Length: 337
Ligand code: AMP
Ligand code: MG
Image 1 (tube, helix red, strand yellow):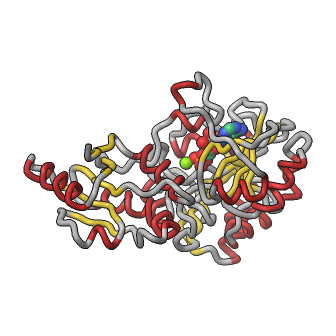
Image 2: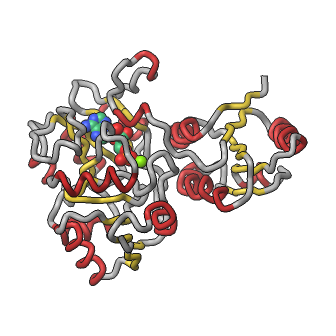
């Protein structure tokens, strides 16, 4: 299949909507990362997402709709707490899990009784939802297990030849995926930290819960939690220690004959000496680090490094999502004890 790559003009959007109506898959920008969309009500269309990504079939997809008023078409009753979350955080980098009414294709929910729904806040995503008139099941537009795409180049690198079309809308804003919140119980549970922080949710709803660590849960609440994710080609190690410790680790690997890539914030990285370096922004502005993170992980795929050493960031605010992704991307942590 030839993959059409095009700027998201009015004409391109019309064409992309037609692909979707014909049960093809289309990659498009959202404010979090690029998504790979298909008609969420059509089983054959949704199957093409799983096929293109090599995604395990028991990992369900988020359904994207144009307007939060459409959520009721795919769910059982919406509790007052759920409605409050919807009113505050949609559109935006926020996904709500509610009881499904069975209107989306069964593979979208991977057979679960719940459905995950989001209203994106990006002009191209919104225009595509409107033009197609469809709810779009859309995971990140990367090969399963790789870092999510934040540019059309990333999508093209991973999926050319496997999908009908990539709409280019420039680099995404948030740069990390949405926060996934299970609102089926009395107290909401954050299943995946993301663009909306725990503090922001708590300021609206009072306390929220975090899921139990995986070891304790035989059946993860969010099936995606059990898979490897976000992995660059070279193994990544998270460094926990100061500048001197970081430089020591770089030297240790270099002396063993390895080429070392370093991913760190500006003030630290200028003081480190390595084979390749990626500056992911200002340490005091973790939103900037989040926006650059996946770009940084993919940067090293085009450099000949044997391993990547990454700075650890404070797991607060958006830092919680950053550290969640880095911990999953990492082979191990190296601590200064
Ligand atoms: P992705 O589409 O790759 O950004 O990942 C979507 C995330 O939402 C994955 O971690 C899924 O497992 C999770 N998810 C989607 N639908 C549900 C659902 N019905 N219940 C729990 N988690 C879900
Ligand atoms: Mg993904």
